[in-house]
Image (cartoon, rainbow, N blue to C red; front, side, top):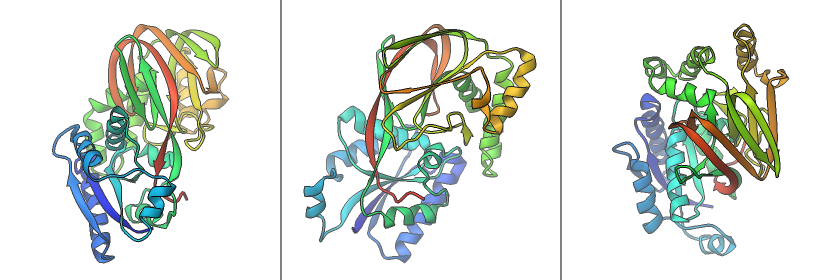
Length: 326
């Protein structure tokens, strides 16, 4: 299949990594004499407006009929270049519009957890050729949520967290350390620094879970994360068993433990052995609800949702991603 590549480039993602990645892809396309156009974000959230305009004017869906219609002409393929937040904004805009399009993604952020989760190469040129090699888009799972208290709905490609991971995101986003480390492509270390800080300050909180119709309660939850794939925080495997190619929900709850045992928890988390702790609980299913009455930080794909109570229900939604997995 031959494409007309529509590049949506977030130049400020990853402290400029998005700009560098975009230039690499543009140079490659020019050298290969491939058809393309470029659209650049100019302000925070601009990618959603660009996505809306493209959805109404340039993009087309995907089915057997459309595939046959584009056998002899260039298919307009949207390629998002930026961080997970950029792709999050684009897909949420399509979700709000009730539109479905296949998209491609070339990671240019700091954490790049979604690319890691679907086994998309981190190297820009390798990622591009993974797109070019694919004959069909891959069906990748995403999560949708409906938060009743503030009547908030959305779609996530990575995870939604209440408690520890959300507090870590809030602390990391406010940290100068992240900006400094991003300049040296070491953004994930900013998350590790925030993890160490927040682990010693995060308190336990009560939650109620409904998983496949069964209730589970925790008096002192420490972390409560619904995830689409194993990773959060730039490569930390919070749920090694999760798989973005399966249409199910994975929920991880970690209970609050004593300060003395926290050091052991840090080691388990960093060495991807958190699942061996008796304070670690994993649930999987297709129906999931979380109720947290005590105000806690929440995050959706690294975007802070604020400190508040939650009554949130999750479902799954397939998304076509055009690439050939490693």
